[in-house]
Length: 201
Image 1 (cartoon, rainbow, N blue to C red):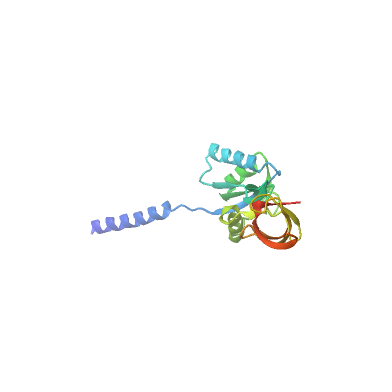
Image 2 (cartoon, helix red, strand yellow):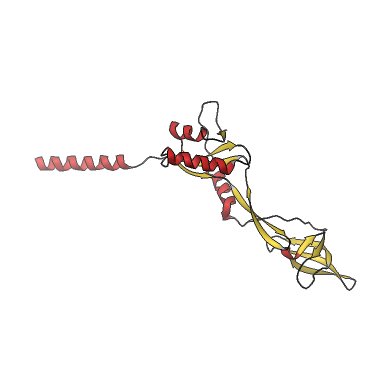
């Protein structure tokens, strides 16, 4: 009889321990405002504070939203990272008084975006907004920067039509190609060219 009671008590105690051990987190993404051009510095400052103040279990990730932009210069394909939202930094955190204090008092941070009023905690980003931003940061194909349009005069800089000039007739960004009308023996002939093979004149 006594043994049954003890076993029952152990079972209850075990269940209570399991419940208590389950961590409770409220992870959300927030936007902080900073001076344009200081985004990476703010990210570094905040990451240092997270470690020095042992806030790794409250502030998880700090991101400067970037996307790769492809451009063609001097016949070469160049990928340049560009800031998606200059002056803004994303922070994934469990918002409470402590984590809120650490972020807003970081050097270079001018405030949270979405605060209902002075001294009030901000509203987190919606999931769909976060997914869109994270997609822009690398899941998508780099965005092409195209410096020419249909009707522009171009010069061929490499390949069999080197030094010929023509008019852009069609642009195919997905293939990184254009169709240009090039004068060959006095006749306009449609020719398909790679982006890196041409320059605007």
